[in-house]
Image (cartoon, rainbow, N blue to C red; front, side):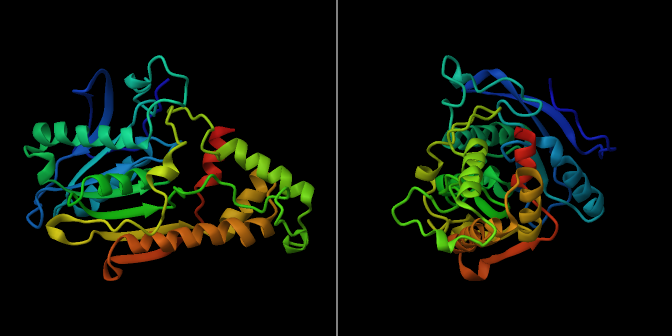
Length: 316
């Protein structure tokens, strides 16, 4: 069943449509777009919203509506959001996964290639330009941040700016905590309220939820994400005109994350505060190095926000 659209009144500028990629003509992709208005500064700018693993384009529609309402008189750039195969309104799985075991088909590199093909076709059809002429701005969440980074890496000179919201750690298998079976394990280093039994339980819970080999509804194979993007701090990205892209990194509220982890998964707050939150913050600090220092902002904390645990609740 297709995901319902949000129960809000959307501006008439937002148009819902479908498109079949030329290389995958059997399954149409659902998308929502708005043609830019009075964009004299950069008429080829296109803002693209990239979904997380367990969300869909309906989550971005209020944001797009807000942009149009706020800047309708002064002008706004073209806007685009879409549901990947197996997501939201695009209910059917990626055609290239046919005959493969669920979750062992297309990967993030394939998603990037599909996104480029989508931009080629929408560029020619709606924006009357080639994809290479577009100046892209990515607004991404969770694994959408991984997609945005890999796209900017594989299509240098195309991405003007990136807003990365609580990025998935591309080089992590979510094995955040000490391994009690390791030869180097020191039980004295654990927080006072965490026993070895609790540590084992939490490691098993998070592995069952978030490990790269866990199958997701989208059918996206995450096993090779760490191979595609093994570092948070490189490579340097190239934007239009030889400049580095503008980059803003936003991370979740560490205290909110810890409290929600405890509420929903029983994770001791001390475990989150000592291990997972610092590790995630270090990753976000690394992201700032994929552009020039003067072009990087963050990591900013989104007070009261938490993404990963909300995904866990959906998965559960």
